[in-house]
Amino acid sequence: MDCARVKELLVRFVDGECRPDEALGVEEHLGYCASCAGERLELERLDGALRETFRARAAEVGWDLFWPALRERLDQEAEEAQGLFDSWRRLLQLQRLAWAVPGAVLLVVGLFVFGWFFVGGENGAGVSNLTRVESIDSHGSDVAVFRISKDRTTVIWLFEETETDDESGVEPSRNDIP
Amino acid sequence: MSVKGIEGLVEPSDAELVRRSQRGDRGAFRELVARYYQKIFRLALGMLNDREEALDATQETFLRAYKSIKGFRGSAGVYTWLYRIAANLALDRQRRESHNPVELRDSVELESEAAGQSAPDPAEGFHNRRLGERIVEAIAGLTPEHRAVVVLRAVEGLSYKEIARVVGCSEGTVMSRLYYARKKLQKELARFL
Image 1 (tube, chains in turn purple, green):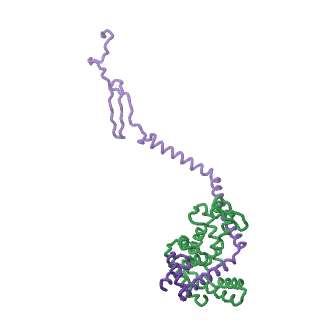
Image 2 (cartoon, rainbow over the protein chains, first blue to last red):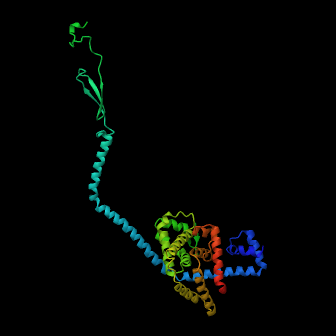
Image 3 (tube, chains in turn brown, orange):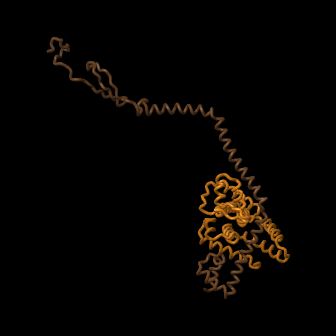
């Protein structure tokens, strides 16, 4: 493996992210190349310095400083959440009677609309437009009146074949019956 | 699954702590915070380069985690989930305040003090202090996306795959960002390494 290839792989090698065959090649090269070995050392020193610097800086913030402040924020958060819940509950309790009036109005309107459209308001879906009336012309027999719309009505005459040949309209006497 | 503690006590696993937290156990959540707050703070510090801002972002991360823990299904590790929340938060803050650059002096001074306290040898202490200052300055010269991958890899030791999951990009992008960021840092810090 040449220096150019090793320099390319060196960062991954130091991070332990090379494939085993690549790591072997780099390791072998570092054994005899002082320049690449120096670069590896520099990378490792850089990581070490970064690690030490940040660990020292972070160590300034101890548990005794960190946790009480966080606990306070957690408590505050919990209180806010509880406060929001309580305020909603209070709002609903206070307004219960006030809600009853529009609620009742809505119920009445709802029932009216339901009745109008589904049970039988004028021209509603549930209107029965077929009725039966007694007809004068058919001697007391019924006629069916089918009202299609306001302007259109169909009358269906219902009659039985009970009329005699006698057109006088006089009912035959009991003596005429055989 | 549980983890054996130093004193032989069985410590609950992350998954167990998450389950208990989901049932509203504040103590379990406190344990999760104790395990990860330093890691999250380091990432926030690396990305925001301001102690107070990073502290606030770390608290915000756990606050968000607490609020959404019921929805956490555990497909990724807890730390990946927390890192992800923190990285997104830090990126959002950076974008919001991009026209309001971070004042480095406070961070540098704090770092100098910390480095100075931990070094018994004056010469070594001076070198570390200078290196710390230069690192803070060099990191500040990177974009937030580059800072995130450098901190997650070099400081937290995450794999490329884990970093990709945290920052929401491909492994190839992680690799190229790391390559670029390290080259830049090497160049900036050449005299100190």
